[in-house]
Image 1 (tube, rainbow, N blue to C red):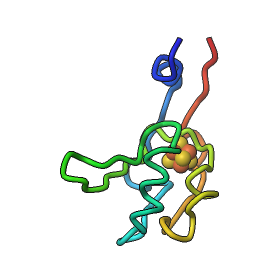
Image 2 (tube, rainbow, N blue to C red):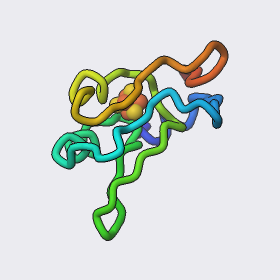
Image 3 (spheres, rainbow, N blue to C red):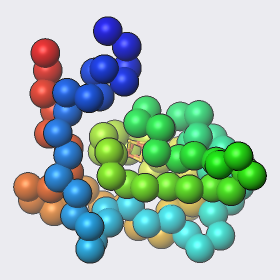
Length: 91
Ligand code: SF4
């Protein structure tokens, strides 16, 4: 079983109007690239032109981005409100 298959069994409730992670307007490029490599859900991406994109839907709430790059990258990092976010399902 690969990582994508494992992630596919988790369930996500996305709080569309209130994202629990918000990036700074001009995130530090080096910090962003670090998370392209380190976010386990692959939510930090660069497109073919190299433009950064981020979507907090699918976040595993692991805290890696906050620990590695909080000040350089993040305007806000909170756990989703009750009932929202990831529900882990094993098996
Ligand atoms: Fe990715 Fe973890 Fe940050 Fe969520 S908390 S965006 S899964 S690194």
